[in-house]
Image (cartoon, rainbow, N blue to C red; front, side, top):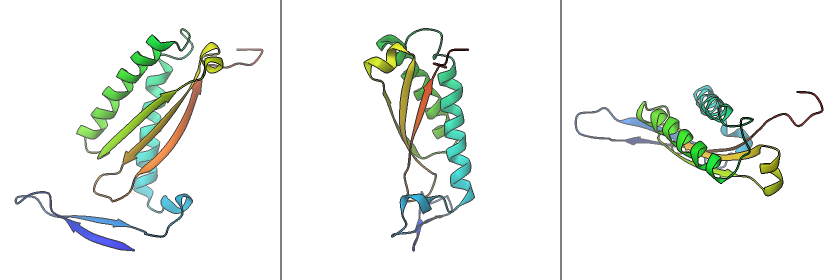
Length: 131
């Protein structure tokens, strides 16, 4: 287990950074706060993506607009100190684009922790016989 103090400036109190050095990726969700932040990030991704999926095909322009909207929401989470940093990658194959499906690969850093949490979210409209 690694514990250290991180000093952010002369007028601010130090923050405690903690992590497990040999933890498997499945055991990374030890702390409830991490799970809540991951849920919040996924909720933001779903809410913003819902506006784009199903209204048109996921062509290049739609994906670019979605990327801009997601970046705006993630920057907002970062400004509000829910996350310390993030990366987003939107990917979709030609077959996925035709049915309006895409995948969001994301990585974010919880605030004041020495970990990164990664995930993938599949987003798309229903492809079943009924809608």
